[in-house]
Image 1 (cartoon, protein in one colour):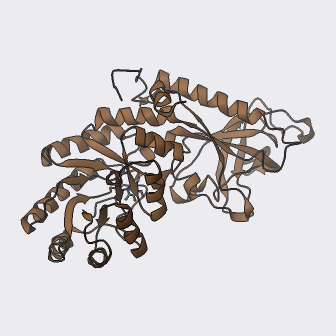
Image 2 (cartoon, protein in one colour; image 1 turned 45 degrees about the vertical axis):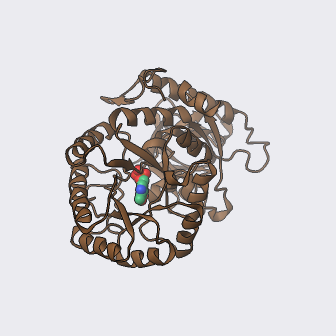
Image 3 (cartoon, protein in one colour; image 1 turned 180 degrees about the horizontal axis):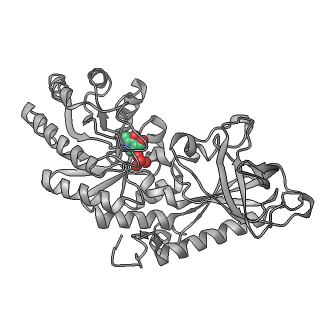
Length: 431
Ligand code: PLP
């Protein structure tokens, strides 16, 4: 893609809290599509499930994030973390943009290969792999993979001895919202022995990888991880391995990207000469903002406001919840914010005691019979929301649909309407 081509003024999409012009225009476009689609549904007469929640996915937003990446981390090649959102259109765009894929299982490998890419554009970035998946990776030629312990090396020796290995090292993820280091990563104390064992087993270590966790507060986590990786590179070379790639993992967030990428970029230039290839495994960074979800209000209950019993408050029940697309509340520490999409005054349901011009307090619940299924314990919305109205939620692209279940018989496969607010993405995807 040509950075001098279409208008990329939306690259840095938040600056001092203000959204850029192109991002604002993109949001308007998304809202229009959401409204049109929601307005087509007649909840009083439609067939069962026609009012199900649905997404609008703006591929232009994914494209803008890619351009932003290239501007700030030009040296680092993204291997998109499929786990985050394996949507086929997202994978197709990643392929068109020249990105690779980080896969964690056989089916993620299949999804990536189905885009037609060469297996060398995949890293099997799961340090503790299933034996049969390892054999499968060998069959389909996915050679690059991570490891972080001795047992895994013996397993790899038995099932895929000619693979290309990345030693995943431990990072300090204590300031991260989603921590991973309690589960994966070799400490520097054992890294040397692991590299020696790999050498004895005649396995090929080609790189080092790490993941600083997601939603980190302290960008110095990247600096420390790069410094540690340098140490491990030197140890590996001393032992006789020929390393050529550093994998800096995922965890990049929309709001802090410039700050983090600046520190990372400087650290890379300080510690790794240009002949070392640098890859990363961004997931949420690409897709979090690109997907907006609309859900229907299927029921409403009037209760006294727990904070002010003289006022009404309402419990709203949506047809999607934490067992569905709001799984990011449970698994990804997110707090999706409801906004009113379509609302029609419904006289049958009466009016609240407080004036409708004031904002009204709601709690918002999912459709299952489980009490844990709460989307928002308290939110003020401008006006009365009725059964049949639609709410929408922005920033629903990461760790949402992919971890939805069918608990209570509700759908785990909601419609996605694809649009593009960016000509670059439209051209690549033929929209
Ligand atoms: N790489 C690995 C090994 C991961 O475990 C994850 C997330 O768990 C990612 C990349 C993607 O992280 P994020 O979506 O925060 O960028």
